[in-house]
Image 1: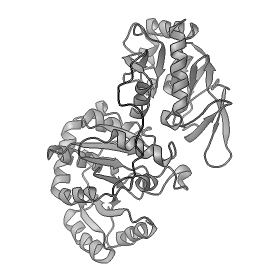
Image 2 (image 1 turned 90 degrees about the vertical axis):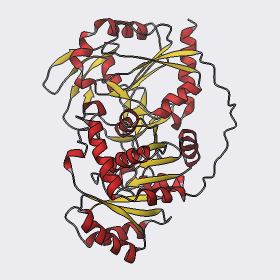
Image 3 (image 1 turned 90 degrees about the horizontal axis):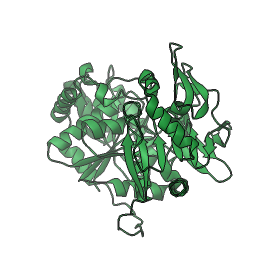
Image 4 (image 1 turned 60 degrees about the vertical axis):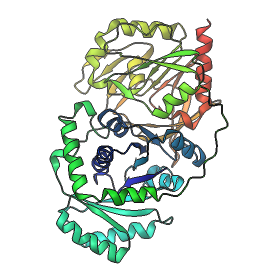
Length: 444
């Protein structure tokens, strides 16, 4: 399983732009790459899937133990090379201070060579001291190459000779600073692919720059030199599980934050996923036994969501009839009585859960959480600028660092509704229980 990780000393170094450029070049050369994102990020894999047409997943060592993380990687690996994009700074894990959840910890688990992207804008020989610090801190010897970003390639090549002579790590090239092809940011990572002007043209330009300035052949050799993984064979039967229940999955521009791993776990449990659009659909799909309302950007489509009365009526009736619903973040907000936006305009929502969501102008309870009650423990994260007056009392969310905790989640019958985004492989039994609730509902 040929593989590399693209990582950096800090956020904003250009990891995503360079990762997308490398993936595009590999694809143009006839390679068949797959990609992974380290950490709880929905946007970067969405770029890889929808724009580049490359399979992409999420892996996170806070969410899953080493064996589970390896098994997920092995199951999702396809083609002939995997490119893993890191998160934040290379060693920045849980709370910014722990190794768990960091890019480096994932590289350790997957025995993956790391390519370090250094933002060299405005710097010269001093970057050698920065790189040396990372090499010295790399206790497993995983950093195998360096790319200099936002610097003149001719000057970068001079620095590259110093890097190889003095630090004995491979220099793979320099990428000039070209703002027109760097992807813009907003409050949740990158803007959505379908909102980027001329995204394909930008990617084509970026791929050309990467192809011209980065030693792709050497990068592939580093990926090919990745050591073998200790794979624990899955004893499960290879036969496809018969689909016994149908789950309606909200899928449009308002609700688009889903982990590939979550979908696959549902499908392995015998669930048929049927998509619908809360913005456009007039009715729920037929023959369903449950509803999944993921996160996304409902705040950008409040008028459309509010005006679609028929689908809201269907969802409220299904909930009141006892149909199990999984709702996260934006999906939770949609189920409330109303949402008030940042211009203080109020929009009526489904009304299945009493409460009002309001824009508060700052991140609320941001970061990793473990959600617990007497019979549930599952890991997830929160990332939202809205809050409500009724977040639920059924579970306790616990931060992995410090002693902060708070009440959350509405549990009604088989439904599990609240702000946290959940990573189902952190507790597969959670999905087993939900599927059983769907089956029970389907028989009533």
